[in-house]
Length: 255
Image 1 (cartoon, rainbow, N blue to C red):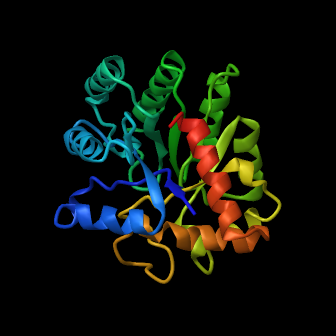
Image 2 (cartoon, rainbow, N blue to C red):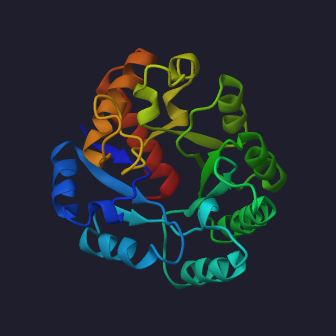
């Protein structure tokens, strides 16, 4: 079986001591493709270095995370646009809205997302969306910008059945991660009945490790644990989930 981790911060400082070992464990576990979201200008160099060291396995996105949006967000976006003009990327992201920690720059987050929606259209790239306590607001902006060409994924999806259906109607897929394995994660109420064609697998490492590693550093080698849970909830085999979600990722990111 081959798996694609559609959202992994494997370039994170938390992997600095053992990044090569963590990637070796991932490859041994069958996770042969890893898509890396950007955060802001501080993450670009190490992300691109990781991609350069593993050009057949690791693929970079380019975007501005909503939690990095502040007064100088336009300067950050100029750098995002400059990079998108210079070389290929798998997606625009991660971008979106986050109302969990701080609502101070919510208007700026909305403007930054509108700009990145435009960049995704301009470069014919998928959009990778971060939505924390802000699904409706994010979906409204996607609906506003949807002209039939916009596609992407609501990463780390842990919303309701209605929100899942709205995301799919908007032409987006759902990124399913470690939360699906949590006892009260809610995925048992949402995933049954959804087709595999709408799903991607992700770890969002080093965050949100699946059971039984919850609370520890997450890594791509744990992706099969998420696949197993999705298979159980959908009444499919792990191999079916691996094949379908890998195919979905290849199609979305043009890998």
